[in-house]
Length: 283
Image (cartoon, rainbow, N blue to C red; front, side):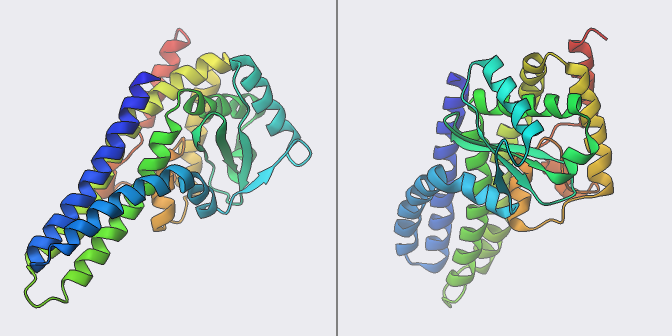
């Protein structure tokens, strides 16, 4: 818990610092120090906004709808049983209307958390596998790393927008430095993604391990991950800027294909995750 709290504080500072650097670069390129002042206050405002609203943005980007014990009785029963087993609060449940099989957790703490499953994951997994996936997502909640990942996703999106706005606005000034402006529009999103990457990959291994212990069935989670890898390849999520940031919170990479973007993937290799779970089961 202390490590995750430290990482969250580090994320706050890193993202705020990155916005200030962007503002300083634009101020230098345009010869207008106002951009630096704007960046300082905008960075602070961005931290506050993402703390309170990043979970809502993530759920909205997937068009997720809340469900209860009447609308999704099996899903509700599984989450309720696992939450009781962990001795922790039960999160709100959502279902996203997409056939891409995936799941993610979001929120700022266990008392204000949500777990979202897609329609696709509920179709391709059996009950044992789905329960194991839910254990994985609940451990993201109870390990208190959902604030870190949710904020990283929200801030990465906002950083990208800020860099682009400052670049195009600053470029209108005839005294602006075009090279500095061009570097900002490309490097700022990459820097934000790298901060997100450094936090997200390790947490997947931890959630796999702790979730397998919570469900008591590491092989079911390994089986689910195999199905999810095939399922996301067959029915990938259509990428949009909002979805690309939410993808970092999902249990499996929802996009198809390997490209340059794969170098910045927030998900560890699926084969390594499966091998770790099999070792945990004694295989």
